Amino acid sequence: MPTDLHSDSPAGKSPAPAGNPFGEAAATALLRFATAGSVDDGKSTLVGRLLHDSKSVLADQLEAVEHASRRRGQDAPDLALLTDGLRAEREQGITIDVAYRYFATPRRRFILADTPGHVQYTRNMVTGASTAELAVVLVDARNGVVEQTRRHAAVAALLRVPHVVLAVNKMDLVEYAEPVFAAIAGEFTAYAASLGVPEVTAIPISALAGDNVVEPSARMDWYGGPTLLEHLETVPVGTDPAAEPVRFPVQYVIRPQSEEHRDYRGYAGRLASGVLRTGDTVTVLPSGITTTVAGIDALGKETDVAWAPQSVTVRLTDDVDVSRGDLIAAGAVPEPVRDVEATVCHLHERPLRVGDRVLLKHTTRTVRALVKDIPYRVDIDGLERRAAAEGLSVNDIGTVVLRTAEPLALDAYADNRHTGSFLLIDPADGTTLTAGMAGGAFGSALRDAQDGDEGEDWV
Image (cartoon, rainbow, N blue to C red; front, top):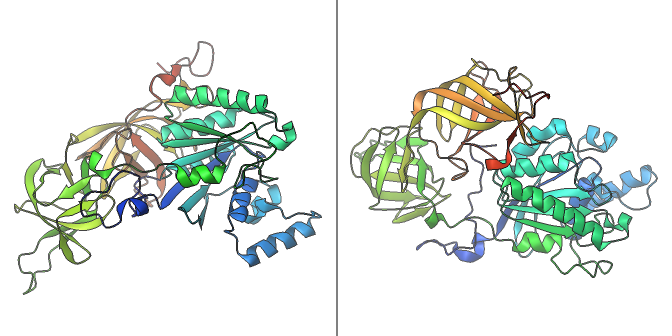
């Protein structure tokens, strides 16, 4: 999850900054997306169909699937076996772990995070969707929008996934009826809009028969939109780096002190967002010292400009105190804080409780922190605030208040997914405990639990 696993390839359809050799064509070359769906909605079959029909399956893989299907007495290959790789997954017919699939078409490259559907694996979906630019939420046309569908929509909203696709699957089992599709699409779109999801594209499909997955369906001529693959190939992704504030977490200080580079002092790292140019005025956080960029080195050569997410070395005009974990920023500079309020998803079996001492990892900076308060956890099914007297259990989503030993320059996650995310880590053994997103979530969609139920005493 955060801290940050976004691609090193520029993304988006906006014009590249001056000097960007990748240009607009390569800017759309990679899409990271995640799939989610309730148990038995056919998600593994959909992913298998997508890989098979896009000719992204090797011959020996397909042969192995055909052989395994024949052993089970099936006449046709069970495409779900292409994705459910763990023995337990195959035996139970469910997806347990996040699996990353890599495939490509002539129009785009893809990294697919295939995430589980069970409630107890919500943390796995959070992990898989944390870096996604698109989420495919699968719904069984016979069942419509269920509790787990709403949970997946809420997680996509929580993680600020820019694009959501509603894939209404098993249309062959409802005789490809347009009213069934329209009712499900309307209900889901309204719910997603209440969560602040900016865009939903609904597509009727049959993963088993291949309708509207890669090829258009002749049995749903009432549908005039794109197939799933066509949408994945053409959806605009990424942002214009020039529209974002500069955020450059320092990973390493370079001081060769050799005869050739006696006075060289450079700050190496990956530009998390924005476009940085020689001569720009920048602020070093958390110290607040202001200086200018004297030079930028990339791949052993000096350059005048760098754009996210390039890895570069930055040289500053003034000899200021900068070390690993500092943030070089320009534009709207975040105010360093020690009291952090954030929305979190707890990932570990050990509960997170008030009074716990943890390590907080934000970009390249790790500081000690104390859990001061857990105001509430979120009931995703009803979007209600509920009491968190016992802390947060595994898979719980809630709000925490942290006190850090040192100031942190955090952006709100809603403004910057790269520098608004963090991890809470067990200081004893380095185990990842919790994924955090600075600021609130779901806007006005959350409501207080009603009197008489579990959460009435949270206030």
